[in-house]
Length: 74
View (cartoon, rainbow, N blue to C red):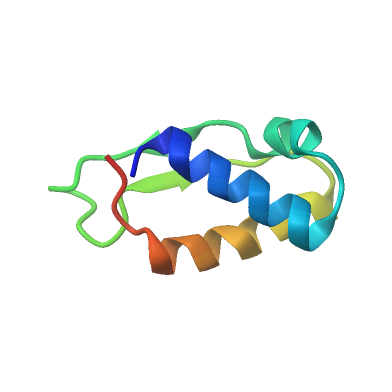
């Protein structure tokens, strides 16, 4: 899975669960940072969402779910 695939999964889940449109969620989500697997063996990606408190909380909730399913992105 690539970082672009991960973003697509984020947007689909956010739009389905929290409502709203993918464009707004894309702005809230921001970029996915990839880390070296040698230094981050359990999960090599991170995000830094920006938006309202509720939007950031929703993104973090989805991120927790996606980290369990897709810990390594390349």
